Amino acid sequence: MSVTDTGAPTPPQSPDAGAQFMGHPRGLVTLFFTEMWERFSFYGMRALLVIYLTQHFLFSDNKAQGLYGAYAALVYLIPVIGGVIADRFLGARKAVTIGALFLVLGHFGMAFEGRGSVQELTYNGGVYDVVADGRGDDRKLNLITGDAEFPVTFSAEGMTVTGAGERLPAFIPSAGYKLSVRPDVAQIGPISVPFEQILYLSLAFIIVGVGFLKANISTTVGSLYAPGDPRRDGGFTIFYMGINLGAFLATLACGYLGQTYGWKYGFGLAGVGMLFGLIQYLMGQKHLHGKADPPKPIGAMTEGLFWIGGLLAVIPAWMLVQQTVMMEHALPILVPALFIGVFAYVVIAFKGVERGKMIAALAMIMFSVIFWMLFEQAGSSLSLFAERSTDLTVVPGVVMTAAQTQSFNAGFIVLLAIPFSREEEARAVHAREVRARAAAGGPRLLRARRGRAVRRP
Image 1 (tube, rainbow, N blue to C red):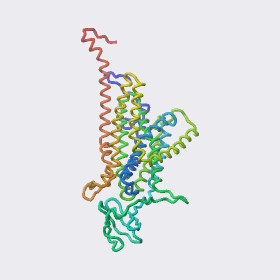
Image 2 (image 1 turned 90 degrees about the vertical axis):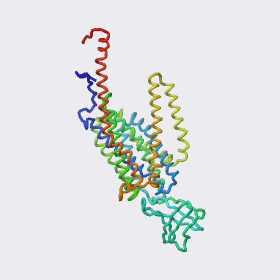
Image 3 (image 1 turned 135 degrees about the horizontal axis):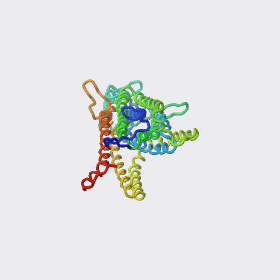
Image 4 (image 1 turned 135 degrees about the vertical axis):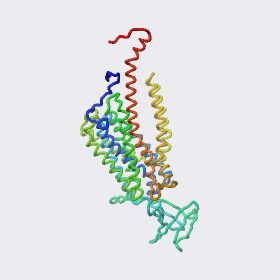
């Protein structure tokens, strides 16, 4: 880094300094929109998931939130493995491509909703189906007896049946009947596959896809800037705005379509968004100047092995996402044990300043875990609260869906991202100017105060 005549430093230039967009490397645009569409697909599905599980598959609240928790835990864990694979073997471009295709498959798989699960009511030796009709506030339950349907409502005291006449009593106490759930199945040739299993398999594809993609996009952003480039922090702020822009648009669009017209439309739109992201990522490679390429060239056979490995990784993800009880008991033990193990390693393996920096990093990670644990309530408990206990009227005549309430956080971040980015860049440049002037004038001032002559070189 050089210093100008005024004492201000000349900032280091990025490798592609000739191709700029809003003062940043042109490759930032490619990564911005790739991540925007990936987060569009992720948050679009996330906004609907728990409501979908409770209303379509008739999961209990505990089961739905347990599945969401297992899914979220794996989504945060697997990118660690994906990042190592990309850094050492595949490179970001190939890893992101694999991840994006897996995400597209997963989101489109979620769109195959089937009829969901059917609630069965057993009363006085007879078994009756209870089916839902309509969506949102218009959702009603009907009890089917033969070729007739009768409106039914449930309360803590019992069940009220309207218009059944002599077929059923108008009110049946809770102790007088039993409710159970019958999963719907997809008939694939001679094989009957429960739609629940299609759901679990789709979530597994999404988990593995996020693992390949998420960390590697962020790493590529950092590689666009030379060490010490004052625009780096601002670039990450803009990139972060892309994440939240995708989340904001997805929760509004997917949340509306899914709860208003059909789950398949909300999940399908999430898949289309990821497909857009993949296409523009591949088209924008020229602006990344090889930053996303493998560290060493790999052959087609080696690359094929990673594709196969990704497909095989779907199997344990598919199994784990169903083991919600095991995950609920294992994670509170594994996470503290892992943290203690890493802390012990840092204390033993590092000395002096490096040890202090690593301990500070671990402290920030610990608080980050707490933050994300609370943040993810938006996709589980707060979604159910918004659905059942919130007046969703925005203005008279305009009612938002429960899934759309998740757009507020992302919307505010989008509004504030650009001003904060500009402020960070200005502060970084100012700090460099102060340091450069201090370095140039400090020794002279000290010598002058000691009564020594100041010589110019």
